[in-house]
Length: 626
Image (cartoon, rainbow, N blue to C red; front, side, top):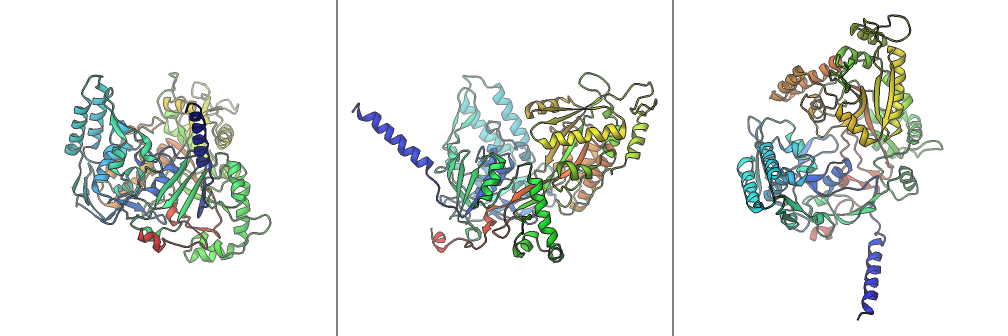
């Protein structure tokens, strides 16, 4: 026996290795991601590709229609709201099932939302749940009690008190298994949009609870993440992960118990992880890959130029189709294939985000010196001196839309177009003169009334991408040339860059923001004096009051107009940051082979709508019978 045991162990190890490394059977669709999901726990998701995966395997009370990002029914088949906009009542459909056949009930939502409100869970989006009455106070109470907890204290008693406080104080209650009532602390026009966000998804409460335990030494509810692994994970969305080999691949199979399974196109999807952007493109070119959602190589600008040549050759047909309201992919799908020097398998789509540079608006720099950028006239001067079209044409070269404000145009229904400052060098110099800075001795540099030169501008960027350095260098040259100010660029790796930005150790620093939900406030709240993402140190109580007034406005149309005035005030007068352009996301896919990619700037791409041209659509009768 002593002789056989090592042999048996080796044999078992070889069998396990063979099982793990065996090639997956061909999937109906193949997608390549640059990085793997860190988690399949919806309450702990934060990255864009994780959120997209979360919306694939889970379904919340409602969902977003990817065509226009309007709200559509999810687990809740209908809902009502009170006249004051504070109380929402959701009626869950009785045919919503988990992948194991269990009904999706209000208990699963209560359990999931409580997890999001526990500091124990370390959820990035706990703050979104604070809009529920009593939620923020509950979170703070729990955090304070855990902070004061000492070994020897009664963890079970604290947990029982926590459960009771959630039931008593957080205004989300279930009158039965299929009726959920939520009371908000203020009217929130975009509450349904939040409910469609992956962190608001339910979890299968029974299975998740089986992987949790109380830590007697800390009082925290700890969890093993084993419940998120294939074989244990129970989902209620269109797909179920059946294989997950971290940093390698994930296989998604159509969830036969999903209430709307007849609408789900692909029976199986393989998501491969390839970190190298050049290798990604090569894999796509080799065939067998349907969608590459983040094209990374620098030569993508040349690839996009080839796409523009293809569109230019067919401009007449594309224009006619556009006038009929057809999406571009619908037109491309029926056009002749590309000729030499053209391509149609790459596309830049406007995204729900804005590239910008932040001004340090604090009264003093980190070394205690007066900060010229605390003066809005100086900030306006620097903004007016930037030729953004030149930056887009010669530096970024991705065909982005120039931005003068923060909210991407056309991304939010009913929100008017707001204009910020144009490119105007004469006005830029006039603003700088009004702030007390002018070239008094004709040496090409501006000085103050005492003859002191403008302080050297510390232009900070992250070295994570050549794009950031190239933009910083171009801005440096524009400001030196047009304003006569000394500018020095300073690149740091991502971690040190973030530390300097948080500390205010910069004059101007690169930044960017993607909206989290479909409302202008997801961008405008960044400038609130108390916002944790206000890295600029911008404080204007008048602007805070304008935001508050807009948020109190009950009429939806008037509220959007008031938010638009907030944005005009920010970017025509105050200019706490310098918008450069709306982001674009570069995809690779061939519209003659794949349909289901949507064009709305929020880029809600739902896997259940993807279909390879010529592949069968919807669930089979066998799947319905399972």
